[in-house]
Image 1 (cartoon, helix red, strand yellow):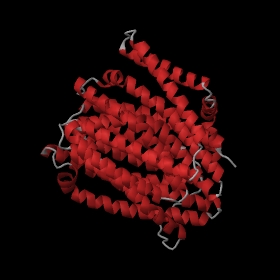
Image 2 (cartoon, one colour):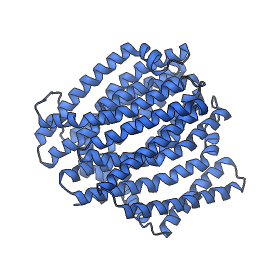
Image 3 (cartoon, rainbow, N blue to C red):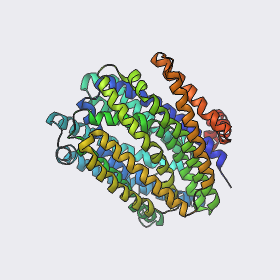
Length: 519
């Protein structure tokens, strides 16, 4: 049986929470730019987070959720509750042991890792800042890994609210750190705020687990078949995510030789161009459809799985194409209006917008990759994404080395954008060969979205001729451009716009009752 109505309502519930996350993330970004601009503190902050992100991706949240949810969901569909709880308890225990040990070793080796591996070209003071903040972030990584296990369990039970609050709470922790601790401890205050937020992500999920009577006891049951299956599925996923993280390490090492503030500008552009629209729309869609795809595969619903994948891609393109175009045409005045104050000057604004414009190429490809790769993971096939990502790593690293010399930080942005588009195209073709996507529907949706985006650009250019004040121009362009996009999309036959708006209205009205029913 198709779960489309539940999927859409749940997606909009998660979009609502992710929208809140974007508000808190935007406040955090405003505070960061005002306090530190593109100074060395932000270079150190962004660099210090690389190793904890690597450990989380390889040992916890990234690889684990993709391997754990299909297996755990399989136990649930077979009504094997006892084995499901044993699997969850074992995975939780192994996660704490492995991530905790890795973080302890990294804390001890932090000075060497920064000086030799991550940022050999940083000035000595920036290296010291990076080392100390890395140690703080590693403490947060242990808590986030536990939160990731809790969230994967709740996702498998079709509960999305409290796991979606995780990034909101981390943002709130960092905001609290900037307000209360930065005046005392400088940039370290923001890092300690991350630890506070990570602890909150664990605590907020405990009531949801208790309401479902899910007992996650610390245990190790390596004889359980599901544990071995999770470990087997994690292997290729480790290679896949390791490739992403290896490219990030190459980027940081190359960028550490560029002028101070380059990494900070790249970090801000990523937050604005990729993290905000991609997290708000793309991540909300994938977070909801992945457990459903796993369930559909486990129950043999191949046609419903194909429909879910195609719906996920269509929704991703419908929402992210206008977002990318909107940020491209409005990015320069928006960055200047919002961030040019305090330590953030016009030069920083121009550099951030340049990188945002390059990332427009990357946005759709990266969001499509997220949907397409989860299609394989839901079918317990982790080898196809692994080989595709290894190819992406080679292309990305090679382009980075070639382009950083003549183009600086912009060359690194071009490298990751081009490689991301190539990876998404490769995975789409592989899905197409397997008959896993509805090509006519996607072709029509992409065509309508492209025409709508051109209309949106026309509205923005027209309003630009009126010489409005910056704030009014941005608001009028966003509203008028959005109306032009969705209006023309609807006129061209995109009836799913009305369907999505109806589901949005009903989803927002029923989000509380939905969570109550899932209890």
